Image (tube, rainbow, N blue to C red; front, side, top):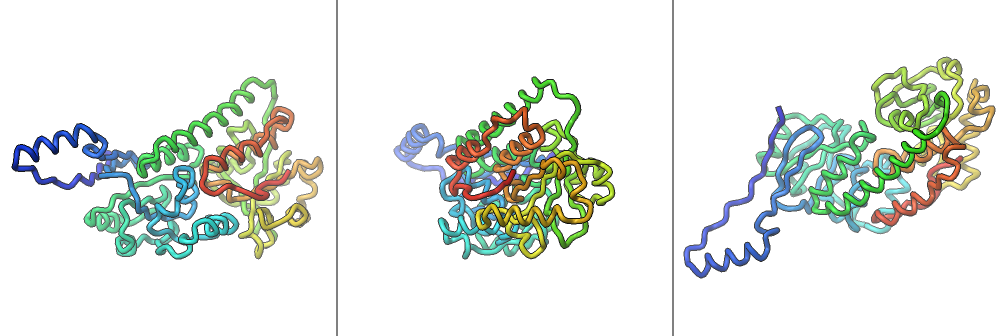
Amino acid sequence: MMDKTTFPVRARTVPRRPIAVISALLIALAMPALAHAEIVLNDLKGRTVTLEAPARRVVVDDGRLILALSFLTDDPVGLVAAWPHDVDRFGRELYASYRQKFPAIATLPRSASSAQDMIAEQIIAANPDLVVLSLYSHPAEQQLEQLKQAGIPVIFVDFVADPFANSDRSLDILGKAVGRQADADRIIAFRKHHKALISARIARSDRSGRPVVFMETHASMQEPCCNSPGTGSVGKFIEFAAARNIGDILASKPFGQISLEYVLASKPEVYIASGGEYMANRGGLLIGPNYDAKQTRDSMARLLARPGFRTIPAATKGAVHGLSQQIFNSPLDVLALELIARWTHPELFEDLDVETTRGTLNSLMAVPLTGTYWTD
């Protein structure tokens, strides 16, 4: 049964004098949008939530939601009442860009992240008119009830657990919630168009078999080999690109561990490592605007120098690639999809210009994505 949470419009006093009644009717006829400002949202937990008006003070439990908001408004930080200050998840380099343009992001109140227990009192103190929680967070029912009693609506969205299925739906929900439906429609249409182009070209091709892909997420010298997506989350991007993800043995898990022995036995034809500035102290892939091409190549070489890695087919034929973890878990992930398609089917997608896609995305978001976020 769907949970229906409604925050009703406050009652208005009925005018007593006829002139006041007529005036009120004329105003209502002239400005129907003001008279009927309710916004009905159906979130990703199947809950129906009604807002009195577009949200203007939003609490989020994941900094990456600010990236999603940046596709809906020129001032995403101005919509945020509190956020977790989870800079590593947001991306240090991205955070620096946002802080330069919107200094207020550094001093906004702190909210609990999706990895922590939600504190209703902390949220109430931020005086929001909407709370946006991640689908994979599990707030206590008592905390949600406390927010409901305080008149603060809560919705659930998802750009992480199953981004392939949920990102566009989440953009639609957020667009409605903050009164920016047209902006949401624009980025959703762009993303769907690019997915359709990839799908159509693969369907028309005469390919036989699927290239075998080993994606090592958060690739590191200091941690046991090997982190890999399962068939959920990023694994769906690999599947959509008509490639075989060796992490499929993890089944529907978003991520998990696979052994080096299994990697070697799988004979991956394409190797993709993900990383970023957050991996600097973990011997990982260094990629992003704060690193030049040589630093990125050197960090990739160190990863490939681990025992056994030089013998996998991907390494022997040079099908080794890297991308920033920061282009996942937000509407930017269409870049990751295009890169995976190009890397797994280089002849089929030889003309696919991911930089052009980035340029269009930059024109749609408040803070452009600059610097190096992938390497061939």
